Image 1 (cartoon, rainbow over the protein chains, first blue to last red):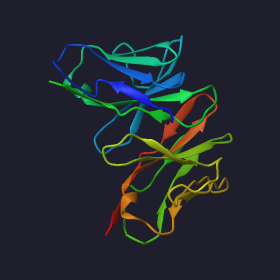
Image 2 (tube, one colour):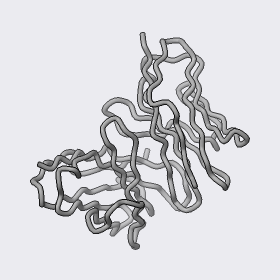
Image 3 (cartoon, rainbow over the protein chains, first blue to last red):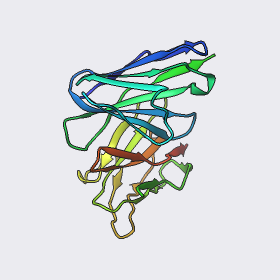
Length: 116
Length: 108
């Protein structure tokens, strides 16, 4: 089956530093990848939609200068949290969409970010 | 506006009892609807989608366009069904909207 990996699985950083999270589709090409944020015991909040070779589309209220998304290849998308603050602490999840049609998303295991 | 509503945050049922997790949507076009499940300490995974019209792990969901609903049902709940369930809608612009999720607890 289609597998999506995320790295790192857990990261702790100091306030003011930047953190990069990688999302890879291991056995398929993903034209579209999504980045979500999940708060404890709450739903997924879509942050942005990332399309290979083009700029990401950010959801309303998500600062694009703070959450930099790069989708440089069909198997890799990165989310960089710049100048992280404690309120950015959260669980970040990516998902990937094989092919061009809307269908099943394959989710990564998530990355727990803690900003001290 | 496109919206997915799951009215119940938490649903507790006894083992062997029927389960219905509610999902209502708002969408002007022809929706593609999904149910995703997240078991404890596992990643989100697809449970079923309306176009496949199949039963997975005993769960079924029927799209009711008149009531704009896509409720998830299982006649006899099992303890291993305890998880977080998300209803999702996909639109033609690569947009997915997830509901707020329902935590299902199946009690022994």
